[in-house]
Image 1 (cartoon, one colour):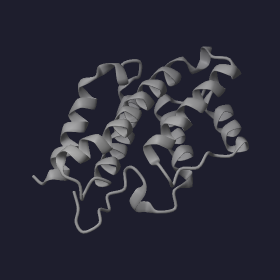
Image 2: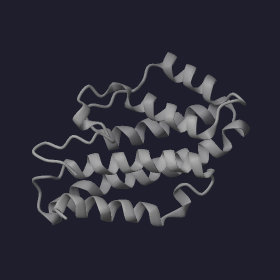
Image 3: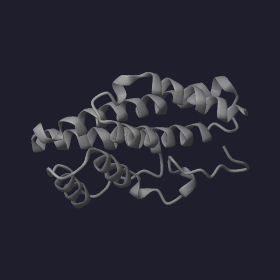
Length: 162
C-alpha cells in the first residue's frame, strides 16, 4: 500500500466510524452520501501526492473537516427537508456551497440562482427519494469543475492510480 492509499484509508475509516454523519438516513441514501464523501476524500488526498506526511496532514485537515461538516449538514437536511421552510432551505444551501468551496477549492463556482431554485423545487417534492436528492445535490455542487481530475470521485491520478 503506497502513502496515498494509507492516507485515504485512514481518512475514510475515520469518516465511517462517525455514525452521526449519516444516522438520519436510510441505507440507500447513506450509501450515496458515503460514496460522495469517499470521492471527496480521494480527491483531497491526491492533492498531497508530493507532500511528506506532516505536510499532507496539515494540508488536508480543513478540507477533511469540511467533508465531515458537509455530510452532517446534508444528513440533517435530507432527513428534515419536508418540515423546513424556504428560509431554512436557503440557509442549508448556503452552508453546503460554502463547505463545497472549501472541499473543491479553485474549480468550484456557485450554481446560479435558477439552478438552485429548480433543485430545491424538485428535491422538496413528496416524490423525491432521499438517495436521489443526494445524487442531484452532488451533481449541482460538482457542475462547475472543468477538470475531471479535480472532481471528487474521479479515479484519475497523475502518474498512477489508486
